[in-house]
Each structure stands twice: as C-alpha cells, then as structure tokens.
Length: 209
Image (cartoon, rainbow, N blue to C red; front, side, top):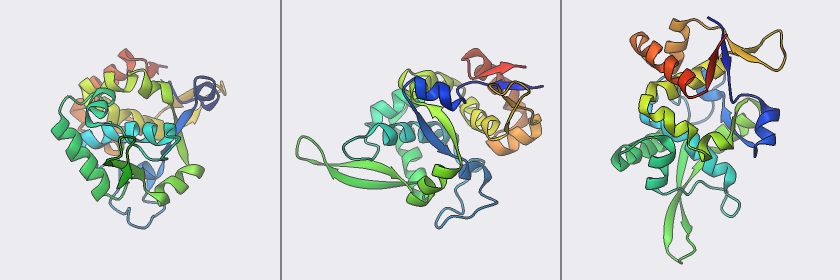
C-alpha cells in the first residue's frame, strides 16, 4: 500500500517555525561509517531511545545560548511520551554509549553546574548533507508525544521516512516499502506493524494512499 508521509515537507516546515535535521545515517549507516558510531543504528536502538532522540534534536536546534540540548527529565517525559524518568535516564545513557549524544556540563543561570547533551559532531556534520526534516512544531505541540503510547509507531515513522520517494505530484512524499522492509529498518516485530501503522494514521503522521 502506498503511504503518504506527513510532516516531511521542508517548505512547510520552514513556514511553521523551522525544522530539525534527523540524520539519515542512523537509518542507512551500512553505506557510510562514522568514527565511534559503528553500532549506532535505528534498527538496534531501544524503543525508548528512539522516542527520546528526536526530542533531543529539537532542544539542540532551539538552543540559542548553549547550542546544546538542556531539557529536564520531566520535559523529556512530556515531549517523548515516556512516563518514567528512569526509562528516560536509561535512554539518555544509551544514546551516549552509542556515541550519538555527548553528555556535557554547563553553568546554569542559577550559577550551578548542570548537565546537557550535544549531538555527535560527526553525526551532525553528516546530517547537514543527508537528513530528514522534522518540523519543530511536531515536538513542541506534543504530536510526537502522542505517538509514545504506541512506541513502535515512533520507530516505524522514521523507517517510513527513510524509504520516502516523490510521487507524480512533486509536493507529496510517499513510502512504497513493504511491511518486512519497514519492520527490519524500524527494529520492530512484524506482528506489531499494523498497530503502529494505525497509530501513525490516527495522529496524522501518515495518510493511506
């Protein structure tokens, strides 16, 4: 079935407050190795890390003062759709262990040292050339968090985006990959596919073709 991908148009993203660059490397890194990121694949990442990473990207791209992501754990819970702070901490640790993010110390406005997160420089440079745009409003307005109730849907969404091609209508992005291909790239079971796809449709991330 042809699937029309929403939230993927750069022009629409810019007109609605800009977008973050989701690195295609995480989806396709078998073709291009980056230092320290050999094990960083979307397929192998936990569902929690897949929920948190786009939120990290959002805070990285809106940070004017530090140029690093400095959300609190409560904020990460709210915007990722994950209800447990312990799960958030495990996801952040995994992103750091995979080399995707770096944990940094910075001086907060209250004068105390705090922790923030930066995206791997190699990954960020790669994303300047090969990325999938995510409108900032998808994170800010809680749309991404709504998918958190079906976390496999968050994993599946980016797999669909990585298979996107242009339709005969140049303004429409479509995904024609089959279920097996999508599940392999998303790192989810075939049995969970239809529930994930239904959630994407329900929350406006995908439209049936």
